Length: 178
Image (tube, rainbow, N blue to C red):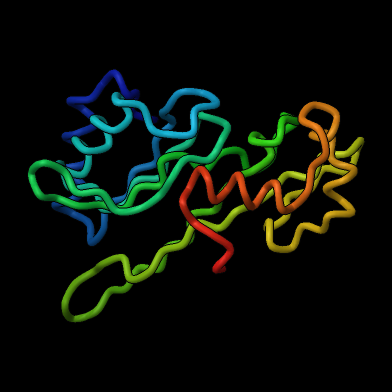
């Protein structure tokens, strides 16, 4: 029931069909290179072809780490909002970059002038993993006392929320303005 990336002709035709029948076309892709903080050339080309076919919003996963988000414009002049990788929402991975995730927050408006993305945000999350205590927090709500108990401390040294915020900003270019 899913299109495989290798079936690009079928996938692009399905996006064109959706664009002709829907108010807004959204694609969710399992794409990218594991543990890489930037989209690959393949990922960029594929996403651009989907935007040219009519995709308005593309949300990607697979790398197990976050990648940037934002609007891109293709060579054909089409634009779309892309979340290149939302990272892990929850997992048993315990390296600091792999406990950091992101939620795609998108507000869509439909009115007399059409349907469009009104606002968007990329909200950082953190998986707290300590023994049997496994929870997901918004990074803004994650206390340092829990960070000090996260299993990531055993792999990557002392974990602090400041370290997570710095990593988030370095990868996504977004800050704490949530």
